[in-house]
Length: 418
Ligand code: BGC
Image (cartoon, rainbow, N blue to C red):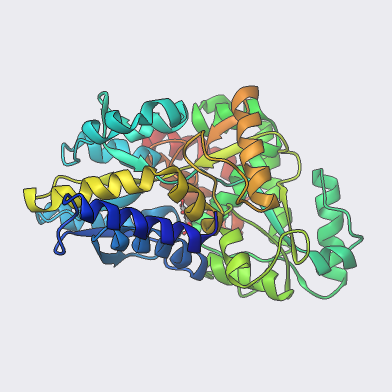
């Protein structure tokens, strides 16, 4: 379904609800804290805003930029401490559990039961949408982080074959360098460095990823394989331009879109930027799994966690929780966002080839034991561990630690953060 058709349908539903006399009142509003501030992200958020507006719910925006949501979580802490929580907050994995433990989130059991969420939301997501058996969040998508986005013309000029192994990847990057472009478009921010790092770790084996970045096994964290992961990171650093430090991820995407950069290693929210720029998968850009991770997926799911709010806001809050879970909405939203639906019953018809691949890969990884929580995006371990990993990875990427030192630091920092 196209977005326009979806909007028309949503508006129609609103009219029917109005006729039935049970519509949201004009003053119904939701205040939503999120970090969707890039062009592609804002376009996706608009699908939600318009849907809610068609249901008579006004949107109060509270954007806090920064991938991975660290800055957003800091802003949230200030609001909750002041006793003034937003209605809904975009949140990832273990952060959801942390907030639920504080006893400040709402209970969505009535909507969830009425709409049968338990039957359509995959168990890996329900682990974070529910706390103590109660629904507290509506999952809006499943992103995955082990993707590479390649400029098609730059790939053609580098031989035309998408790399399938580490060796092939290095060969393509070398060729792009020879061709005079920045082979690897990258933004030097800890969460971006960590996004590349976890793909590199996954490329050294499913068991290794799980042991190191989900189970936090000191042996895996301190292993020779981990040294190899850091060596590969040091190699990737040689393909990044000198101005990478602090660059936002969407500016790195723009380099690939424009062809000054060859490829970006980034979660599938990057696709939202390509689409927003009018680029077509297969024609203008190519999406592949990070070489060596085919068949496996590191996932993260954006969920809207509902906070305890005054009675006057609860109706709109429930309307939002329900709207997010609507299957047509999940299709329309995720087509724009670059992610895939958080429900198993949404058809893939409206998705482009990268989206269809994303859905198929997720199903394959899920049934084949290759689905793992993304460490960089809050689904591998609680925030304290994630931040400790990010710090070490960034220091190493910036040349402040050798690979040997990084392995030792990683093992110690993870142990100290638990
Ligand atoms: C979120 C995405 C977002 C990305 C960059 C990730 O942590 O899950 O929805 O687009 O950060 O902002």
